[in-house]
Amino acid sequence: MNLKKVFAKLQAEGINQAECRYASSSSLSIEVFRGEMSNFTTHTNSLLNLDAIVDNKLVMVNTENVSNKGIDQLIHSIKETAPYIEKAEGEIFKGAAKYKKFNNYNKELPTIPVETKKQLVFEIEKKLKAYDSRFAEIQVAYEESEHYTEYQNTNGVRLRNKNNSYYIGAYVVIKD
Image 1 (tube, rainbow, N blue to C red):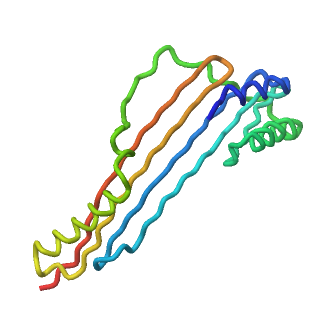
Image 2 (cartoon, rainbow, N blue to C red):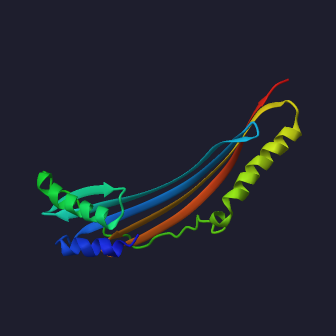
Image 3 (tube, one colour):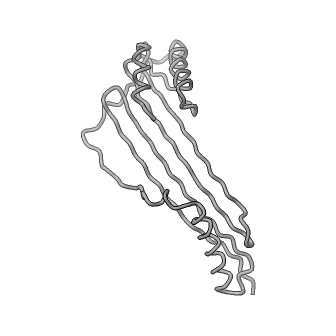
């Protein structure tokens, strides 16, 4: 998401104090039960939060429509909402002197083909079946997620974070 365009549009509308928080996420879920795929789901989501000072009032709006039209509607909503806000409280974050850097992103994870991840889940189920004949029911699940967040404001603060993770779980019912 190009937040510079958002701030340019805000400035063109006479809004000079604002902050944007953009977040996007994606997830993958694979489940195998009784030798068959019981669930395969992918999901993506984006959200844009926009806070602005209009007539000394803090106005907060958000949208999942991060297209140009959605951003235009968001800015329109800010201007429309401001007269109805009673309290004149709120400010735009000034920033901190220092920020810690974290690396919680594995670049290799998104390059692994989905087909390989499916095969892994089936292989784990197969190995569990072979491990002990008392395993009556076996369900294996693979979950993966990726998150990206970006924060920027008119005070010069620009922060970004990208992280991803995965886990594999196996659930078994043992009968003896």
